[in-house]
Length: 266
Length: 83
Image (cartoon, rainbow over all chains, first blue to last red; front, side, top):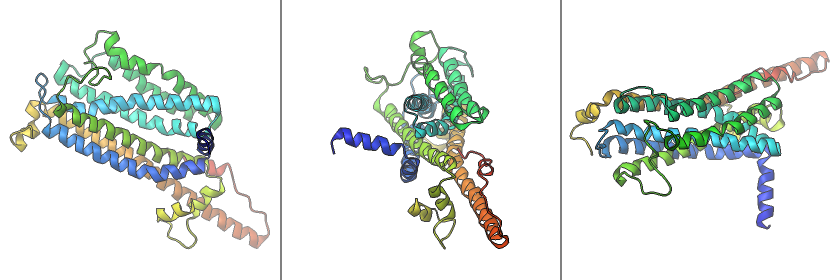
């Protein structure tokens, strides 16, 4: 098989919910576990071992939670935007399921980024909330996630709802570069990015290494959690099919509560 | 270790009131994110399993009385989406 044929075959398989369900179930626990371990290591490292900031003292330790969640809130939206484009252009069912699964995760993680930002802002800026470009653009993103969830609930026909959500996901992606560059484009209290691709970080490695571990951990956790959610959406959408019903029935004469048994038949 | 004692660690140089609630909230949200899909999955199998058992029993009844059994496709949609 040439590489082109391989990609075509992979693309075709991606269109199969049953195949994708198996991939989700196989990868989700590992990615989640690796992510949670990395996050635990990064939190312990950042909270107890990283040196205090020379200006902010120990409040800067919120960074190890705030920065990864803020990055993830943007990445999650970009993923929804890409999935939206794939749905609108190629009508791939999986893309719609990814949007449905990603929106609640994005809402929760963006809320957490906003809340941890407030806990960091109070001792650093002297205020819980400062309505500037960065905070407002993140708040807009929070409502965009909410909009994607509410839109799906509001439209009874699944296919129409999926396309409407895809449009909102694609259009809403315009907000992501606004969030990213808000600290450069406008005067803002918010400090500029911790990491850039072009410059060495302003922090010593003892401060930024735990942050890198935390960011990677959050990404792995995101992937694992998203796959678990996509698996659920696939089950719900495909509940009328033979393969889901045989999962529900479980192995003949087997124990219903045994998940492993179900997987064998998937 | 960046702190001299465990008490120092807890005090966070006077910023305990911001650092610990932030991390506490973070752990709660992470736990919620992990538990939500696991619970939705269990609920899906509980609801669908129950429906399949009900269908099997109506089929048995129908076989006894001679009526044709039908799976209610729309009725199957009322369970909430386990996202």
